[in-house]
Each structure stands twice: as C-alpha cells, then as structure tokens.
Image 1: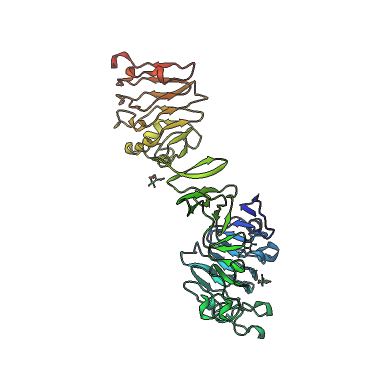
Image 2: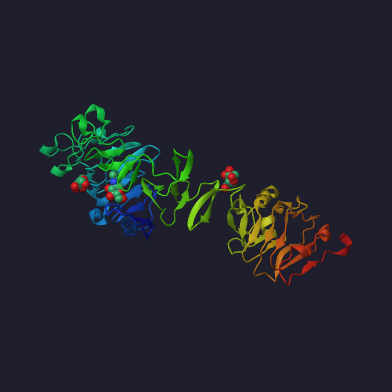
Length: 488
Ligand SMILES: *[C@@H]1O[C@H](CO)[C@@H](O)[C@H](O)[C@H]1NC(C)=O
Ligand SMILES: *[C@@H]1O[C@H](CO)[C@@H](O)[C@H](O)[C@H]1NC(C)=O
Ligand SMILES: *[C@@H]1O[C@H](CO)[C@@H](O)[C@H](O)[C@H]1NC(C)=O
C-alpha cells in the first residue's frame, strides 16, 4: 500500500508493502481553515496544488475558498479525488468550473458549521460576470453524514431541480438560487449535474429493488450491493463497492479492520492477531504512516489529552498517563519573555517540565508600567505546583517574590534542576526576598550541575537544615548562603 501523506508543502512519501498491485491509494490531509485565507492568490493556489495534486482520498476537509482568478483546477489534479472524509467547502471563489467528477463519497465525519457535508456559496464576484458555472459532481452518490447547502451562486446554471434528493444522507438543508436552470442532455432524463451527456446523475436509490437498502447495480432484487458498500457498486461482493461505508481493507469493504486481539474458540482465550491492522481514516493499514501515532487500533495525528506518546519497538504509541500527562513548557529569559509575569503566567498551566530557566524579576512580580503589564497575582503562582523538573540550559532564578508568600512552596513538586550551562555556574538563585522565611522546596532531590546562591533574604530560616551536599551531582558545586547573621 502506498500512502502519500502531505503536510503543507512538505510531501512525505511512505511505502507500505502490499501484495496486490491494486492496493494503492494516495491519501492527503485536508484542511480546517473555514473561510480564513492564507496569503496571496498565487500562494493559495499553489498550496492547494501541492496538497491535492494526484490525491485520491482526503483525510479531513476539502476547502477551496476565495480563489479570485479563473485558475485551472483540472491541472491541479482535483479530478482524481474519490473520497473526502470530512466536508467539502467551495465558497467565495470566482473560477468557472470545479471538476470533482471522481468524487464518490463525502463522509461528513466533520461538518461545516456543524451541519453541512457539502457547502457551495457566494461563488461570484461583486462586479463582472465570471463565477462558478459548472459544479461537476457526476459520480457523487453518497453523503454519509450531514446536509448540503448550495446558495447564492449567481452563475451556477447547470444544476437541475434538486439533484441531491437522491443522495442517501441524513438530512438536507438546501436553498438553490433562482437562476439554477437549464436542460439536461436528453439521455439523462431529468437529473443531471450539467448539460452534457456525461453529466447525468447516477440514481442509485430510486432504481433499486426494495430489499437493497438503497444501493444496487441493477433493478432486480439480486442486484443489491454488499451491505458494506457506500455510493453504489458494480457487483454484489464486498470488493465491488465504489466506496466503503466503514473501512477498506486491501480492496474489500469491511465493518472493522482486523483487530489486534482475536478470540480463539479452542483455547477460550484472546490471542494476538498477526494480521492485525490499524484504522487510518477509512482504510486499514498494517503500519501507521510517519507522523501518526498508534492509539489502540487507530492511527491518530496526536494522542488524546489523557495519554502520552511513547516509543515501543520503533512504533510511536499513545499510553495513558499516570497522574498528570507530561507537558514541556518554554521557560523565561528570552528577549520577549524575560520574567514570569501576569501576561505569560497562564502558559505554565499543567506544565510538568520547564525547558529553560524560570526567572522571577521585579518587573514580573510588581508589574511593568513601561510595557503595560499589571502586577502578578500571588495566587497565580500556584500553577507551578505541577512542575517536577527544570531542564535545559538554565536556572531557577528568584529575585523578586510576592510579599504575601513566605516560602517557595509553589515549587514543592520540583524534584530536579538540571542547569547545564549556567549563569555564573549557579542553578538556583534566591536573593533579596525580605518576606521569605523558609524555602519549602520539599521534593528537591537533585541539582544536576552548578551551585546554589541564596543571599540577602533577611528573614530566611531553615535553609541550614537542608542537606545540600546530597542534592549536588556536579563536581564543582558550591553552596553560597550568605544571609546576614542578624536574621538567623
Ligand atoms: C480500496 O483501496 C484500494 C487501494 O488502496 C483501492 O484501489 C480501491 O479502489 C479502494 N476501494 C474502495 C471501495 O474504496
Ligand atoms: C465517474 O466514474 C467513472 C468510473 O470511475 C469514470 O469513468 C467517469 O469518468 C467519472 N465521471 C467523471 C465526470 O469524472
Ligand atoms: C490542565 O489539566 C486538567 C486535568 O487534566 C484539564 O482538565 C485542563 O483542561 C488542563 N488545562 C490546560 C490549560 O491545559
């Protein structure tokens, strides 16, 4: 199986061995931009071209919006698209024709505005007389979920009546504009997608015998499609379908992909299935494509919230987290983020690891009028309770602290400060905090490298009872505790 996954303009080719030569599908990832446009016309057109040229299955949504020139979409390759798993959105374009003649099924796993599997609207300019004239969806015979809206397309003149009436989708929300009129080719009867002979609408629902569940390849009761077919078929078997209702397993339409565990009736046990496959959109694959992660029996682009990505036997997998899932967050110290302050404190929610330093400076704690940053609410510092580790190149540097707080116990979960390439070799600095009476870093087990500098905190006690030497792993670690004697 050859799966071609496109990420933006970067094309990732992935070959999966497959015995049957028939077993080749080009899969592309769709988009989720709605009506927002991305850059210039040329850029947008070439993004579409990069993404969909030669594509057969769109995993996600096909969105073509705000293309103002009459670009040639046949050259774009849209012609080959057979299946869209999300929705199709064609809006605010000025081109004349969109050839989607091979499109057989829109699954509607994602709906535009939570309602529509197919939306075609405002495809004409304010001035001028160009605009969408032909919407060629000759082979579209199935929308599995969602409705259809085709509204305000001034020049779309070749859709007759209500061609969607015969599609088997759950509901319809269709308002065709007044100017939709024009005769079908005589050989088509009354239902067509355009005026030509090859634009007749295939009516799979109306001609079937009642036994057929609406999909057949002839009128007799023996001409029903297999129950796993969508969009019609050319014969009665699960390999004869035009599209699959559920999954395509090397050409056969099946209700589910071969499972990882199968029941052995002789031993009364579940056994691992050597031929298991993962579901990847609507196809079964024996390996998830690069960039996808295995979650149970599916290929997913990212693990769900309560799971974390781990590598097992060369395959990335999602596994449940024990407790809070690891979350790595950017620290402070960069030009745009010099200190923890009220504008960035929320970026530390649920973080377990801080990559980089954490600086607490007076401009963060008391606010910075110059940058229009208000003071930091002491309660907000509670977000740091989830932090277990500070890694990367820097330090925990506390040079200012809210006066309501008498300790650093918001860091009571912190176990490790890695501090590798260090600011003056210090990886923990706590200085000039008059309200500090104790440190409260009760989980701290390790300071991997670098020294500790705790100074000029006139009311700090207890720090002498900490066995600092046990925390140090570095060979040159020093402890500089230089609190004025009078305060002890
Ligand atoms: C199933 O997939 C194969 C190869 O991936 C493809 O050739 C075939 O047309 C697909 N069948 C259906 C019904 O989508
Ligand atoms: C509809 O599908 C058939 C069979 O795949 C194909 O021969 C025909 O060209 C398609 N129609 C259009 C307009 O693309
Ligand atoms: C933080 O984690 C909790 C529990 O997992 C979750 O409910 C919450 O939405 C998360 N918040 C953010 C901002 O990630």
